[in-house]
Amino acid sequence: QVQLVESGGGLVQIGGSLRLSCATSGRTFSTYTMGWFRQAPGKEREFVASISRSGTALNYASSVKGRFTISRENAKNTVYLQMNSLKPEDTAVYYCAAMRIGGQKYDYWGQGTQVTVSS
Image 1 (cartoon, rainbow, N blue to C red):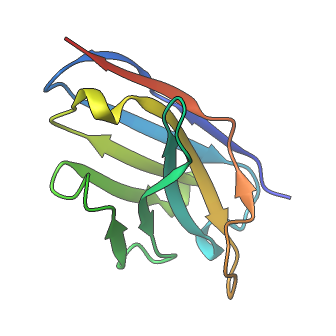
Image 2: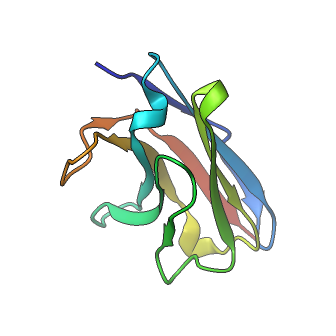
């Protein structure tokens, strides 16, 4: 079982930046593909970004490409999401998730952290 705890959310102005962190338990962090997702009020949860076990393969939703950066520190069992040039449409609860080797879906999820972008 893996526990994921997000932090770093908050209220930020349009054009501002936030850095989300997701700390995980256990000693197998490096074996998981990690992802960030978000869910805005009244909308379905959507993919934001993912990073491979080694950190070499990155994927982004088109809506955040060029503004958000996903990274990981396997020695710290932590994945990050640096969010720049934030827009009101980025307002959502952000979740991190972990996928086991060979998996087709994310197996573990955090509780989420709220990000609100306002003018």
